[in-house]
Image (tube, rainbow, N blue to C red):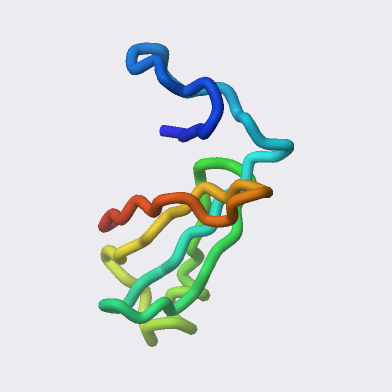
Length: 85
């Protein structure tokens, strides 16, 4: 779910309006606490290819831990969301 710093007080309205000039995200691919790769995205979806997984880990992964950030022009990375995917 997208976050906003402007006009995002309603809890029941679904996704909030984008309060930025563009929608941007950064997704860190983690190996424990080590960032193996950072993927830049312009939507809430990103692809981590098998070739990139092999380059980062030596083999395709059945799951991996990610940390996703929404990027704001005047603020930078927002509060991260961590997940195993």
